[in-house]
Amino acid sequence: MTLNKSARYALYASLEMTLAETAPVTVASVAAEYGIPPTALAKVLQQLVRVGIATGSRGVGGGYRLAHPASKLSVLDVVSIFDPQRPAGQCLLRDTGHAGCTHPEHCGVHALFDEVDELVRCTFASVSLATLARRAVKVRRMR
Image (spheres, rainbow, N blue to C red):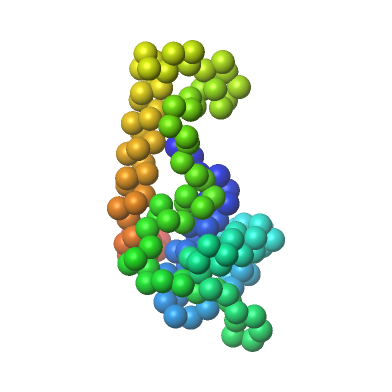
């Protein structure tokens, strides 16, 4: 599974908001940290505000914060906004321009993709933003 750019940007922003705790996080600071386009990140953050993951404030001292405790938000909560689950029975091979499965119920590849998708989603659901932040701190200390 690969995440689209918006889902990745949302995870970066959510991670930075988690690490900042109650301090606001700006588009400029997150964009600079990860080398991503500020305009794309701004759109992602606006979407996080619309769905209630984050709150935003303007002006001096403004920025974005998580709307809920990081321990109550999972990676899947963030990712699923921008990278929704593939509909049941939809073949990944068909999505890539191939004809795909004509009989998915008999296709071992189709079953494998379904299983991998479910494992990834379960893993994302089991990891809170707080846990992700703890892992990130460890990695940053090793730099």
